[in-house]
Length: 177
Image (cartoon, rainbow, N blue to C red):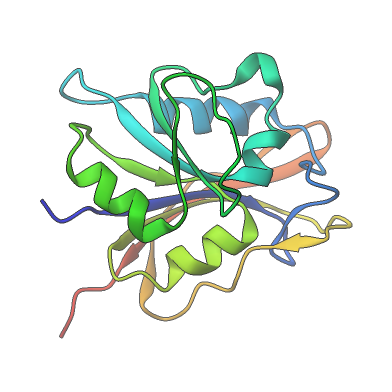
């Protein structure tokens, strides 16, 4: 099976996604959306998440590995020790190869900035789930611009939490002409 990849990201109006390896905002509604999107399956199997090492380490220890999902950490650090049941790969390509041999429903790339950049260039990327934070924050990590290979397919109403407005957007890869 040819692996299809999906990105899940929250970004501010300047495409900022983090500061000092942390989210610069706290939006429980976005966390619930992330958990539901990456956990829920149609056939009772499980989904995979692909995450860079620094982003993995930014997840609170009590929350990792992410439950009910196959966790794959990308790192070039060969001595990195992952918890039991968590896979470690040295590249996005090797993660995709590993996934080809493991039963799963969907594969989500969840960060960080360098992994997003690589994934945006990957022809297997089909969908981008973007939580658009409707203001700017002081960020040192940014999501690359979404180019014209992708079209906005769905937008939620604007919601507000902790005085922060946000909306869920879904971009789909345009079909080849």
